[in-house]
Length: 182
Image (cartoon, rainbow, N blue to C red; front, side):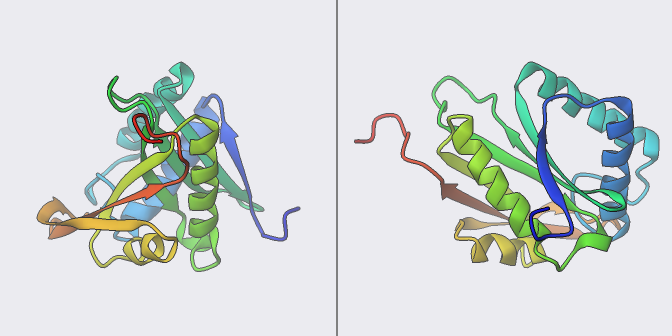
């Protein structure tokens, strides 16, 4: 083991059992109040459909996904959107960094982020971009990990209970392979 109560690995495909586990983590985050693209009324079926779309992207190489597992099963995940426009071959979007409430405050979020940065380099990406709820735990985590804050957009999204929230955009250079730079 790696000294942590979890292991992190890349999935190259996502089967139905894994979709169920990913849906459980997503629904736990929503129930915990996280603004991750879903409202409080999200159902298991809705979550499964979301993950099936992600599975399709993983199968084609348009996305890379990491999962963290502990003794109880899947407890975290993060994705890299790799399929970018032709003029942005060096960039990826980091998204859906989710940590089950049972695994929070133990360093798993930071570990997922570091592994996503490593994976980005492996995939030939040197610039990462993400967004998160302004003032959230994730906002503070990204700043601590050296991500650069671009700015905030007020009333960008809704929390699961319907309250508006602001979003903060971040970026981070994880390599030097930026076209046009020496």
